[in-house]
Image 1 (cartoon, rainbow, N blue to C red):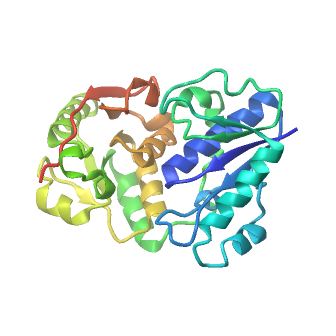
Image 2 (cartoon, rainbow, N blue to C red):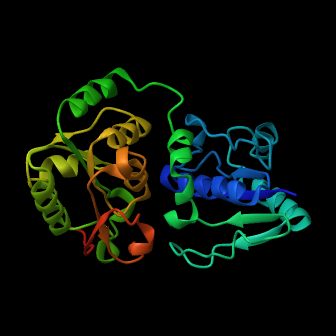
Length: 288
């Protein structure tokens, strides 16, 4: 018997899905395959191969998946159809019932299952925290520019602050965090640890340069997203956004991120976060 876990979307989501797969294997003793599903036109790509993961066997081998996608072209329809046939023939489909909510029943299965969801709560995998720190270590060294940032981060007491925009900016339906959350988090973390150097990580560098004036900071730029992730992870303390990217960077840091402040807003509720973190009620609104 074997189970399969779907891997999809951005890096943070992929890490949640893999952590769930790892815990499923450890708890049940059943072999667990992964199923990365990406296509040529997607803005996202499979990135777990950049880490020292041990669950590497796929439900669909890389060569066959490449052919299903017509090489570098789209091919989504054929990839989906092939997988649907496999799932129907071999597995019971287990779909996540509620996002960011722990379901104790999903791992209690006595037949081959295909798991589809995001599994975004540490309750699924917190028993294997030390293992996951090793699983998610980088296979390759950082770029010279990133290493220069790292030297600065290691020289002082460092705090990362993550601002996510791009797909979060949706007019009246925006889910970007307002400045009030960041100001309160900065004030509280300063009361706890004293002086520190602030490092800002963001997918909208121009916005930060023009609009972020809460205190002096170093803007991380000119490096890859994986380098940004590793630099964030190496900071001593963290102010995370409502984002799986900064969630994992903080969680994998020393002592689960040291002193961490995180926003409670909308679907990003208490169950999404580790018990050790400090949660602040936050509102979301596009500051533009």
